[in-house]
Length: 158
Image: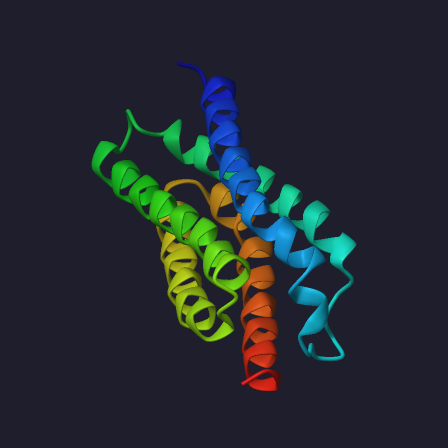
């Protein structure tokens, strides 16, 4: 399987995860989310979809680039992709906790774990393929911001 095919498969997986999270998110964005207190730095709702789409594309390219090195460093690549799958799963779970269960506190605890898993994935990816690691930097930055936003929403609505 060539590099482009691996990136395409990773892209499908990432976009399916993103879409499945949006199924839980969408109803609450229209009903519950407008009714809760949010900090002044809360972005407009329309910004989230394009940002997440770009981040999922970057994640997929990063995963495909790492996956492409599997013949050169099988164990490290498997370990790195294992962390990638863990963080991608946690990414989807956050939407369920925050928007599905409407529980910002539980979502806050989970997003901290998510951030740690993204960072560990970054550390593993950068050792295998520098570009793959760098492609995760915007994701780490956005989830850092999302963590602060989540904490602020929890604080304002406790």
